[in-house]
Image 1 (cartoon, rainbow, N blue to C red):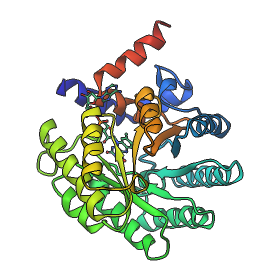
Image 2: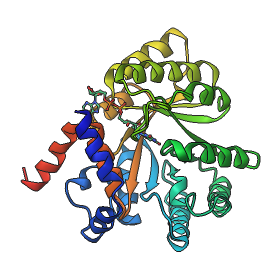
Image 3: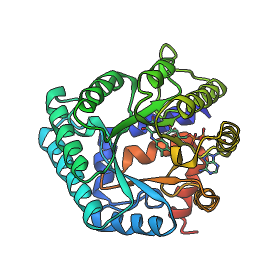
Image 4: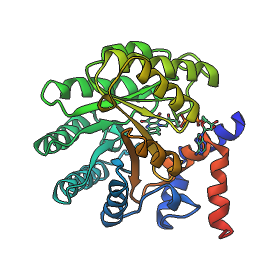
Amino acid sequence: MAALRDFFISLSENQTLSNAAQQYGLKLGAQSVVAGTTIEEVIDSIRKLNEQGISCTVDNLGEYVIDESEATKAKEDILAMIEAIQVEELDAHISLKPSQLGLDIDIDFCYDNLYEIVERAHEYGIFVNFDMEDYDRLQPSFDMLEELSKSFDNVGTVIQAYFHRAKEDVEQFKDFRLRIVKGAYKEPEEVAYQDKLDIDINFIELIEYHLAHGHFTSIATHDHNIIKHVKYFVEQYDIPKEKFEFQMLYGFRKDLQLELSREGYQVCVYVPYGEDWYGYFMRRLAERPQNISLVTKQVFNK
Ligand code: FDA
């Protein structure tokens, strides 16, 4: 099981395969979990979810960019998405990855790109969430977020429960809107819990802390046991439904998304779109080998 996870994570980091995948459009079953390659397709997907009472956080796929023009193009695409959210009156906000916007090129260049995005979103009252990537990129991303938050109040980030430092981070960022997740990258034991139970325990503690002491909480998981626990916790402590939401990935556990929405909980779906779907898709296969059935279903057309 762990070997399979490592295998898919190493595939997710393979740039040659990623480039090759882009040539072939949405294949290998990725179309089940990626909302399209064009802005028109993703608008359509968002609208359908909005009609079901579900809000969206939209991710223009791409990461680990080392070419300045590619990072600038990604910024332009995200700005176009912000305009589309405003013009089309969609119930949606932005998720982005600092490494797509130049973190690996030059931190000032990346910061300027982020500034422009957050400033434009701020004009329209649209929230921008920084997705969190691997450990090496964590502190520089937090530093840029803190700096931006001196000028704008429409930014927030992700806390990954597998990191030993996550409790300190959740305390430090308690005044921010936070998405709390288990963590999707392969990290060494010096910095991250390896055992599923340890991660789950920390995940629950972080969620409870932010619900009780912090700003808005996005509980991002497909784990029904944790969702059940959160429902019990918010009821016990009288935490209003406006203070939190459940987040899930596009294409995953659609029945559960609808069930929660019908029960009156806020539900937000993470909607990825674009050509650069390969790394994202491989991480989903690493998380849950059963997701491979998505692939086989597509390949064998069943
Ligand atoms: P996990 O994979 O631990 O599964 C636990 C149990 O839940 C399973 O045993 C099964 O019973 C049930 N289950 C899970 N998936 C199911 C399915 N598809 N169908 C049926 N049952 C299922 N990571 C990161 O490092 N940085 C980030 O910025 C983000 N952002 C992000 C946003 C959103 C909206 C989500 C949902 C997730 C992320 N992640 C992330 C990924 C996250 O860190 C984590 O890797 C995945 O969510 C997988 O963990 P889960 O908690 O969903 O369940």
